[in-house]
Length: 253
Image 1 (cartoon, rainbow, N blue to C red):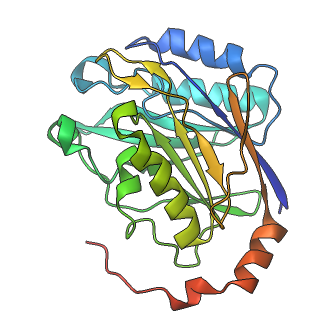
Image 2: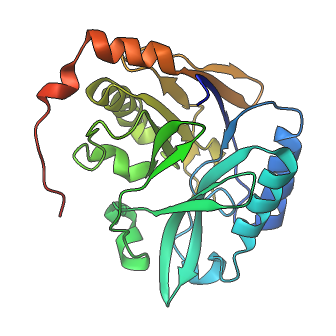
């Protein structure tokens, strides 16, 4: 396995409903960045738009672009997109490897406050990917508010959250990211979008990576938020503080 894993997220002001422009801008922003894994925000190709019938992928256009990018850069790229599958819309988190194989996670907790639950179908499966020896849980935005679903059963080492989490509720985002890291004794990388979207909601720079003790380990340079996962450091922390052994058991329904 890779003892150290460099992870980089793009602070991205998403172009509203413009896939080709967003693909172009991501390529330009990441062309000189060296990393093992790139993260893009929730619905990075369109913005968080609640009329999926207008913008959802029908022919794998975003997934195909991600495969091309991963192959070209020999790097994992991940982020969520709106997709249509079997007459249902999903907020789907793709995790694409350099060989063009991929994992997918459909957002479990849909944001009823804005009617996401009326337009999209919820996923029913928790997805943990394995990459270079690391076990990584995939989560999307509103999932952050529901700790039972992300509870570490000693089955992952890190969580990736991708989001469109606006300024008016940003304290909750910051607080809960830190809490998920502490309670699950895992690395937690939360990537939020920036800028003002088509609904006139503002998104401040608010992307971070937390270590298992709740400390921020990410750094920001230009538009890139980066962190390095260190397996030996995590292993030693868990060995010293064996809190996961005392965790409660839950049934997810």
